[in-house]
Image (cartoon, rainbow over all chains, first blue to last red):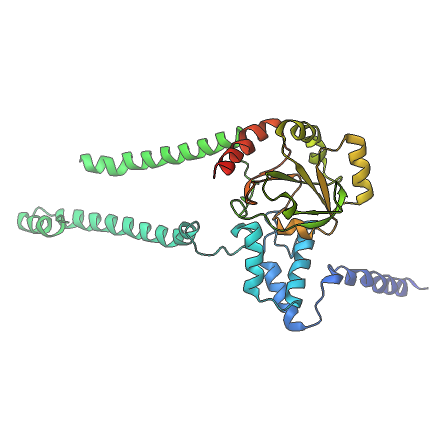
Length: 155
Length: 186
């Protein structure tokens, strides 16, 4: 065999093996494409409890496999996404969801971005006001500064 | 002037100190073993124990069921021969079975029945009964995510406490036994 042909054969031969790398869970394949889309979506929003920074779709841990199987079985049994999520949180708590629901324990988590933004705005407004007051108060004009303090410094 | 000083230095200083306080308090809790960061609190505590109906690996009956223990407290210990930490807690379980006077039920999780039997023959059997869960379906119902895990169930069938990690006599005395007193009073 000439060297070029040999290389081509080697590449074709090796690429056969790369295809098998995509078939992670052969037993997890759902026949219905709609169900498959739901399966992919749900397993991507559930946290693997053992390897806590991976979704159960990404993880190779035994428990993740078990939970994937559970999700697949529930989809096949005709359960809704909500029912599946409820099943998981009933057993593993909100922690299992990458998208935690809004409840008394998580409101601070959800409100934090807004609160921080409001806090920043408040500080910015105060600083800007003080600065503009200092600027206005700078010229030695008695009437102006008096007027300024009487209107602005009263809260 | 005084107000300016307060705003500019005192409040940021107070906030920084409070943050430091929280950080060091949490670090202290972690290093003293009071807080285990990887622990995920179980939503099942205070709820009725999930149903279990498994073939018995060992025990007086052919099947091991949650309903078998109605009216008395019991413990469920999740273990497997593949789990090194379970081996670590085994001596403590043997002692606990003697001292506590409460039946410890084993949940043999994702394991081979033959190997599990050999393991108990070799190391001693602390369990009142052991249910076999090779697929891990029952373990999911109990919210199990790592072995060993130990549940304490009250006489009314509610889960009183869960401990994640190797059981010791100290854990029993400090974390589980006190919950039992509360559970039986109610």
